[in-house]
Image 1 (cartoon, rainbow, N blue to C red):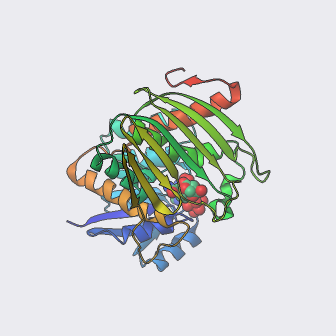
Image 2 (image 1 turned 30 degrees about the horizontal axis):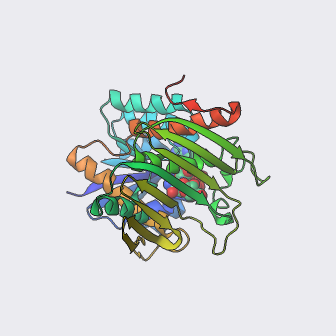
Image 3 (image 1 turned 90 degrees about the horizontal axis):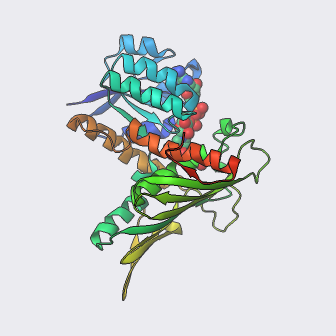
Length: 342
Ligand code: NAD
Ligand code: 89Y
C-alpha cells in the first residue's frame, strides 16, 4: 500500500529529505508546507509535488496524510508537535528535538496521550560507516564494549554557511552536532550515567561554543570521549565524517577517515570499508549524511508498517538530549553532572 506524506519546512536540509523520499518505494509526498510561500512554491515545483501550503492546519484539513516529515529548526517543534499530535498524524521530526528538556518531554507526552507515533530524525546511527561498525561487532563477536572515542572535527565552512541560524545560538555545537555523537555513544556503549564537558569558542562569528570535549560514563562501566570542533585544520578536511574508536574486552574497531575500518583481535587485523552507497543526488563531503536520510526514512516507515516503536523515538531521544543539557551544566559549573540530577 502506498503511504502519503507531507514535508513541513522547505529550507536547506529538506531538499535532502525529499531526494531521500524519492528513493523509497510506496511513498508519495503529496504536499509541502513552509511559512515562506516562495520557498514552498519553488520546492514543490522542483520536486513536482502537487500541493503547497503556508499553514499546517490548512495542510491537515485538505490533505489525507499517513505521516509528516518535519524539517524545521528546534524552536518550532513544540508548537508544530501540538498541532500534529492533536490530529494524530505520525511524525518524523528533525534534531535537535527541542531547545530544552522541558519542551522535549512535553512533545513526547502530547504524542503519548493521543497514541501517535513520533520519531526523531536522528540519522548519524543510520550512516553506512556507523552501521558497518555494528555489523562488524557482531561478525567478529566483539563483546563487552568498554571504551569509545567519537570525534567530529573539521574546519570546513560548508558545515555552517548553509545554516546561518547557528551563528546566533548561545548554545551551538553540542546541540547541533553533539546530539548526534551522544546518541552514537548510547548506540555503541549503552545508557549514560554522567558527563563532564569543557567547551571552547574558537570562532568569533559564533556566540556559542565551537568546540567541546566530553567524558561520558556508561551504566556498563564503559567510558566515552566525545569531541567536536569546527576549527580543526587537516588535509584533507574531515567534514562530515565521524571518526570512531571502539574497544571491547576481546578486540577493537577503528573507523578512520575515508570510511576505512580496521578490526583488531588477538593475532588478527582485518581491513574493511564502510562507504555510503553512491546515489545520483549525493556528493562529497555530505555523502554519508545524505545517504543516511534514506536509511532513517526507511526505519520510520518500516516501524509505522509494523506498528513498532522507533529506535530513536521521542522518548529515546530525550536520553541523548539529557546528555546535551547536562554538558552545558557541566561546562558552566566545571563539574561532572549526574544524569538523574535535577
Ligand atoms: P532552514 O531554516 O533552512 O529551514 C527551515 C524551514 O522551516 C524554513 O524555511 C522555515 O520557514 C520553515 N518553518 C519554520 N516554522 C514553520 C512552520 N511552523 N510551518 C511551516 N514551515 C516552517 O533550516 P535547515 O537548515 O533546513 O534545518 C532544519 C533542521 O534540520 C534543523 O533542526 C537542523 O538542525 C536539521 N539538520 C539536520 C541535519 C542532519 O544531518 N540530521 C543536517 C542539517 C540540518
Ligand atoms: O546541522 C549539522 C548536522 O546535524 O549534521 C551536520 C550539520 O549539518 C552541520 O555540521
